[in-house]
Length: 101
Image (cartoon, rainbow, N blue to C red):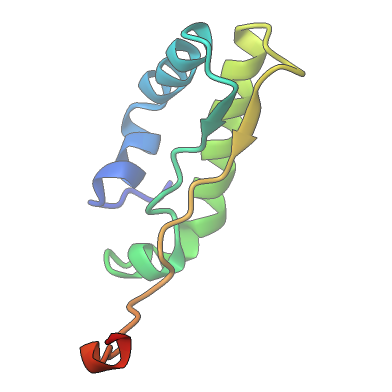
């Protein structure tokens, strides 16, 4: 299994039960939507720690944990799961402030 040094991706591997429990807590608190713990599970970020080949593994695990939480709390049909996706790379742009005057 791939072990990155990125905090959010590492949490998927080192503390999956904590992530699932957090999902359960949100559901029990009345959340209608929970988000997967996949924010840094992209090739862009995982390449930084030489784990770019683990994208599918992390994405699947983050979805599984969310689905398990929905099932464990008997919230099927009541709670939606949304994927968490960061910016997929650096976007560098120039804004000319004079254009807005």
